[in-house]
Structures are given as C-alpha cells and as structure tokens.
Image (tube, rainbow, N blue to C red; front, side, top):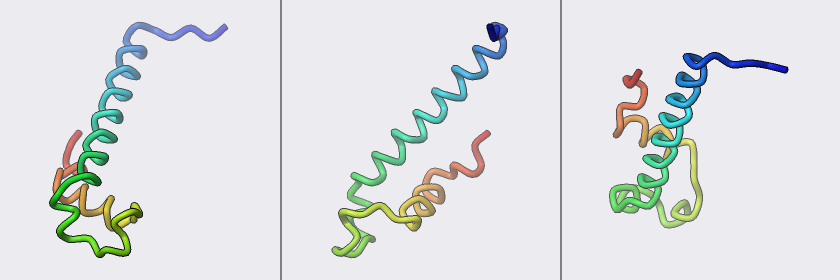
Amino acid sequence: MFKISRIHAMRLYKLKNKKMDELTSFGNYLLSKEREEIISDVNKRNVTHADYENWKHITNCDNKS
C-alpha cells in the first residue's frame, strides 16, 4: 500500500485549494460584466481560449506562485 507523508499531504491539499481558487476565479470572470462587455454576442455562451487568456491577464495568474 502507498503511504504519503504529512508534508506531502499538506502540499497536495494546498495545491488543490489553489487550483479550486483559480477555477472559481475563472468561473466568476466568465459570469462577469467585464467579459460581457468585451465578448461578441456569438461567443457569449461559449468559453474560448481568448477568455482564458483575458482572465490570466486580468488576474495576473502567470505571476502568482
């Protein structure tokens, strides 16, 4: 059976929480008025790579550690 140390468990927990925070942030961006103002009517119901890039730029996700 595979055992995991307490330190590794905490690292995994923190990583999971960080990813969930990012996912929640992205979801909030998709529902935001800011996105609604810049997206075309055709793409309002679609999620595109441009949405992801815009969200990264707005939240500076690339700069977070």
